[in-house]
Amino acid sequence: MNSNVRADLRALPWWAVAPLITFAAFVLAVRIAGLAVAFVVDVIERLDVAVATAAGISPLGASTWLLPPDTPIPGWTPRGGTDD
Image (cartoon, rainbow, N blue to C red; front, side):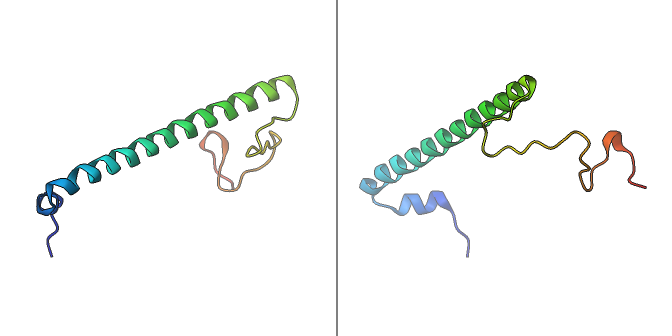
């Protein structure tokens, strides 16, 4: 079964194509807006953490967990060393 989107669109009546394209454009715009919001929120949380830690207070970001600098992180070694 070979599916071809262009052939499927050509098979639709002309009056059905415009609403379909309008809906697709709307969905694309909503997805772009969602990505923009996620980007802005991420930048603001990073700034919040940077400013708060520089000031020596706990950051406001609810999704942020600060670990002490000497906390070992499993599977990660500084400067590419080994855990031996």
